Length: 424
Image (tube, rainbow, N blue to C red; front, side, top):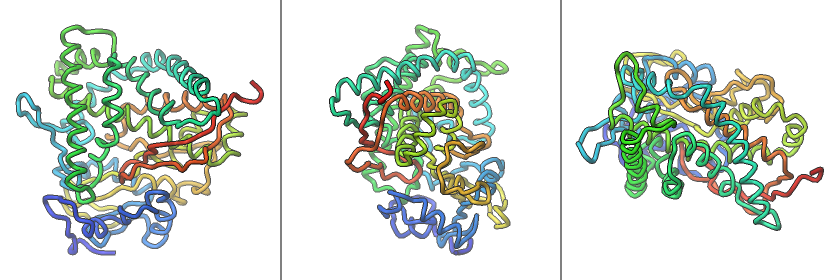
């Protein structure tokens, strides 16, 4: 592959397919890659090793241990990273500029995350789990009742509405926001993709979607300041650490992060796990007979097909990755989806095995940027899967539709046939 001297990544990123193909370790415009990237990941790792420089000079990381090391190394962060454009969001009222939590570096990240973590308590998870279980069963029962032949789009009847219902309870979000969030989650997800893979039209759509969540955050924060309740947003407005509190704008940006991830990434997680389970019917049958393994099965399904496939990091100081020198300001792409199938870390990694005893994975990140809302997403995914296993379900005849993003693996439409279980 290339070396640092050949780096061609410009300071201001614009759409450039040739730069994209040189910079990234794969062709981001190849529809076959989007349909199933894992054979490509395997071939690249076999040919180039767990970490290497691309032709464009970026260090690409495909190994599990190497990926985990980068994500927990304080020498790597977001920095001023034009690879992912428009990390900074401007307050339409004051002109104040800032980043959402996932784009922050310490000390700002440490401060904000410390305050946020206080609101995600075991008590809240214990209160939400029975609600998630009930909602999942109600949604599936309604889908079966309204579809005599059992043919439904699982994303429409379960994957999207279930997180929406749980998060609405958690945050006390009025239902009229739901269609707005559903319509904008995928476009906002382009905020993780390298700018040179996005056309100006796609960037405009991404920014408009981001603004939908920002404006909703501003409205919800103002409502809670005026009338606090017993919900997550109210808890965040009250959260303090050593006398420090979140400002209105910090709260709005934080809610943008939580809402976009909650309504989008959690739905994607459910869709991915159900698709892969149904594509391996012997695994679904085993899990149906061993429902106590649902939590560990969710981890294995997340390992097998990570919703978050790739993240970018910038060297904040001179460092190295697996012996490759990385200078300050250079970029590293961490391929979590590839790392989760690293044969150096997992036995028979290309095989889905829901009985796998320990399926450690990087699906929620690692280090200081490990997803703060992972406990909620895991819980919702577990309850979705547990409810679905109470039915006879198979993949439908129509093709599965995938959203063509790079950093996120998202199913847009998942046709299935669902009927009451034969033993019911």
